[in-house]
Image 1: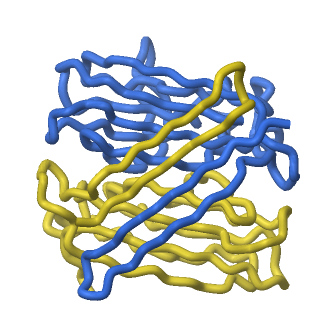
Image 2 (image 1 turned 45 degrees about the vertical axis):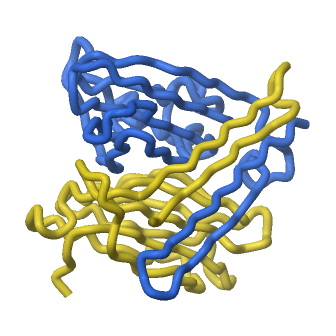
Image 3 (image 1 turned 120 degrees about the vertical axis):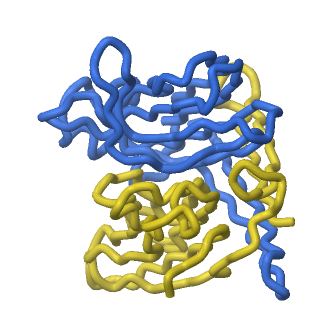
Length: 141
Length: 155
């Protein structure tokens, strides 16, 4: 079964150590059946500062992506500290991932344009981005 | 300077050739090598299907209570965990604003966290001039039964 684990640790951000550790199995919505589709791990190189769509929302019907379970992993694989990518859903900025940083989040695809896009902080550099989607539902194409 | 480390391990055995991903990084302030040094962690139990603010944009350091220029430089990470044990219980996580005494605003829905699910995202805590405070991280429980939610904000 597909699983995702996180550990969040710090010995000194507070007076006592912080240690968060969770593992979840990636199930379909309202179900204990594991997700059964994936795009696998992909890697792309951003060379411009234009938004690059990495996942297209399939929200036309419930049999597609609408309110289905989907999990997205994105990592900025750059090694240059000041380089970042901006992650957006539709036109809404979720946040920035600087070099080496990653996110893992659900994706409901409920909006008519809830595509996932990444935008490099500057053009003219080769900024590697890694991403993976695990999901249910069906794609139009 | 505090050192806080986030590590993810994903096992994707959906396809016939499994993929494993493991990645780790230290949480640094935007574009710097200085560690993030502020943290909030809470556990809340919700008992309503109202959309509520889990973290308001104005809580995030760097926003200074005002507009985009400051918010744009605000770099935070948010961890959210649905601690329910009922597999069909979920929260819908959005960027927007709580219903509260005014109108519920959903700028964008991110996704649903079912019982036992977690998420970890960067968050700009963006506040806009024409609709102040709509960059909140909001949750909307699927049921009015008790639903425990845990979160950590690191800035």
